[in-house]
Structure formats: C-alpha cells, structure tokens
Amino acid sequence: MTATDGDLLRQVERARLGDPEASRSLVEALHPQVIRIVRSHLPVRAAEEDLAQEIFVKLFTRLDQYQARSSVPFEHWVSRLAVRTCLDALRAERRRPELRWSDLPEEQSAWLEFMLVDEAARPDTAPASARELLEKLLSQLPPDDRLVISLMDLEEQSVKEIAALTGWNIPLIKVRAFRARRKLRKLAETFKKENPHERL
Amino acid sequence: MNDFDTKWQACAARARQATHRDEQLPFGFATRVVAQATRPGAAPLEFAWDRLLARLLAGAVAVLLVCAAAELPHLRDAQPLKPGIENAVAQLVWSL
Image 1: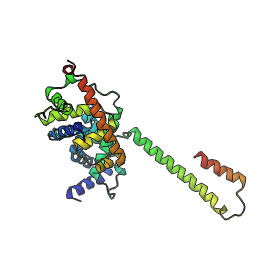
Image 2: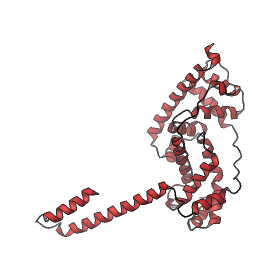
Image 3: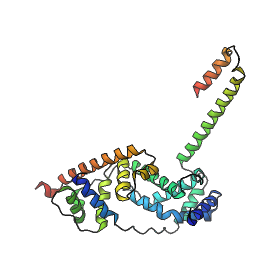
Image 4: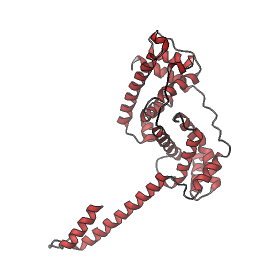
C-alpha cells in the first residue's frame, strides 16, 4: 500500500467519524476519478455535476459498508459505486436521442464511412471527432451494452476488470459484448441507409 | 474479427487519444456534497430500504433462533411434539 493509499484510508476513517474537513478532502481527492467515469457513461440529458454529486452522496451514506481490510482497494470500491450509479442513470433515461446522418459533422461522417465502406480511407481527424462519433453510436445502444463496449473499447478494461466493476460474470460480459458489437454494426448500416447521399 | 470490427477498433484507438477535459473541482462542490450527505434524512430511499431489509432479516433470524431454542428440549424425546406446539412453530416458520 502506498503512502497516498494510507492517507486516503485515514481520511475515510475520519469521514466515518463525521469530520467534515476529512470528507471535503476525500471529495477533492476522488473527484478526478469519479468525473472521468461520469463523463464516459453520462446519459445524454443528464448534467455531469449532478451525477457526480449523487455518487459522492451515495459514497458517504455507504462509507460504513467499506471494509478497509478487504482485498478491494478503496479507489476500486469508489469506481464500482460510480459505474453502478451511472448504469442506473442510463437505465432511467427513458428516450435515447435520435441520431441522423445529416446531424453529423463532416469529420464524424468520414469515420462512419470508413467503418462501412471497404475502400474508404482512414480519416485523418482529431481524436475528439472519433470519440464523439463513437459516443453518439453508443448512446443508441441499451444501457448494459453501452457500458460494456465503452469499458472495453474506450477505456481498454479487461473482462476481469469489467466483472469486478459491474458485478456481472465473465461469460455474461463476453456474450453482451458480442451482441452489442453486432447491434452496433446493424445500427451503423441502418444509419448509413438513411444518408441522403446514399439514396441518390 | 470482421472488417467492421477491425475498423471500429481503429476508430476506438483514435478516440482514446482524445485528451481528457478539465477535471478541476467546481467551486464549492466539495462543501455542497458534504452538506447534502450529512443533512439529517439525506440518505437516499434505496439506502433506507437496505436498512429496513437488514432489520427485517435480523428479526426473522431472531424468531428462528427462538423457535430452534423451543425445539431443543424435545430433540431427544421419543414422543413427538404436542400437536399444539408443533403447529404453532410450523405456522411461524412457514409464515416467514
């Protein structure tokens, strides 16, 4: 255990005893980790700060449930809580945003063209446009599928790590990822058929 | 891996290069969170439900232990339990 981990656990102990200063330090220390998870799995109509706040409130109300001597490091326990809260928020999102080819900026439609057309060249765009396109496509998937692909492909988490974060078993994750990829492909193809230039 | 998957992975690799946006803590965020978390009755409904279930479970375990303790003296009896007691215990267990 590093010195930083030790400091964090001392703050956890003090926060459990109701020390507001320790609780604030804990929020400051964990905010970058939590906000990264929130941004990766944010429902379209949710505000990232509201979701981050919900995660921290849950964290403090459940702080007694964390066992410092267990094999799970505190940061990992927080990540799991954050991922589960984001998944609940995604599930609560009643309607997914409609996606149209005409709404895509040129750089994003070039990436989609690359994925669907054999002879299309790989676009040389800024990474942000590739990321935005993938997030738009992922937002069309059911929440569980979106989560698993996002963790695997955008965050490069292993199946074991995803199992630890979500509580799902390994075969379920593999099956879910396989089906999600198939859905993504169908989705992209349907989406391309709606392209006005494609119909001409 | 088919062509779409390969190209998806290429796009994902490019997407991963996107730099993270500013992760600075919004002004007053920590204070707001701590105030909300320590406010009386701030525990979310889900948490209250967890606590209620835990208490119900503890109650059920206590009743079962009492039942088991009531049965204990009769364990070595050759005679079966008196019907009245037997029925009462059985009903209690099944109603749980």
